[in-house]
Length: 316
Image 1 (cartoon, rainbow, N blue to C red):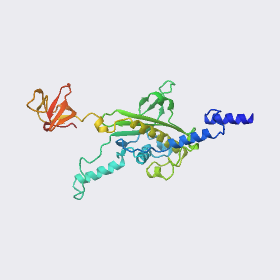
Image 2: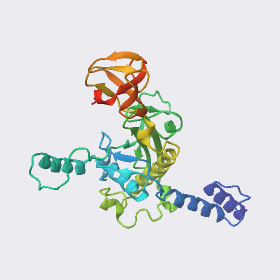
Image 3: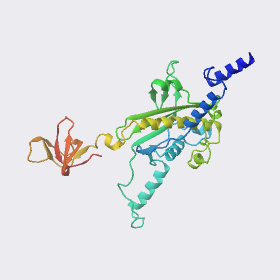
C-alpha cells in the first residue's frame, strides 16, 4: 500500500499517468527538458526589422530593486539576433548632442555626421506587467497599457506576486508606420520553474547586469520575472515569423504633397488625358508604380492617375 501511495504521489507531482510513471523519473526528465528548452534565448537566421525598446509609463521595477525591463529585453534582442536594435533612450540623447555640435560647425571636417543617417525603427516594443482590471466586476479580465486583453490574456491577470513568487508579463509591439498593434505576447512564470532548472545557463555570465538589467540574475523574484519575459519574447519571435519580412514595403507608401500646381494624367505622359488639376498643398498617396519621374498616385477622393514627381515633395 505504501508503495502504491508513493507512486500516486509521484504521478500527481508530475501530472503524468500512473501507468507511464513506472520508474518515476521519465516525467520529471521530460518536464525538466521542456523547461530548459523554454529558457533558451531564440536564435534567428534573419532579422525581422529594426526594433526600439522603450520603458512602460509606470516604473514598477523600482520597488523590487530591479533594472528596467527594457534593458532586460534589449539583452534578449542582442543575444537572439532577431532584430536590429535602435537606441531611443540615453544613447540617442548623447547622439543628438553630437549632431548638435556638428550642425553648429564645432566638429572637425570629415566627421561624416549629418541628416539622413539615423536608422528608422520599424517597431516599438513596450515590456510591461499584466495587471488586474479592478473594474471588471470580478471577471478574470486582464488589462495592460490601458487596453483590454482578449482570450487567454485574461487568465493571467495578476502582475507580480512576491508571496507566491509569480510574474505575469506582456510584450506589446506597435508598427511605427501604421501604428497598428501587431504583436501582444504574454509570459507567466513561478518560483517552481526555477526548481525545475528552467533557468539553464540564462543567469550565468553576468550578461544582464552588463546590459543594465540589474537584479534579474541574482534575486529570486528577478529570475522569475526574467523567465516570464523570456517566455513572452520567444512567443513574440514566433509571431514575427508569420509577418512580412520587409516592414517598410508591407506598409502604405509615404504620402506626398503638391509643391507646385500641376495635373494628374491617365498615363505617365503629359500628352495623355487629364484626370484632374492639382493645387499646391494637396496630399496624394503613391501606389508604388513609377515610370521615370512619373509616379502613379491616388487623391483623397479616390481618383487615380500619374503625376510628375518634380511637382511634389514627401509629406512631413
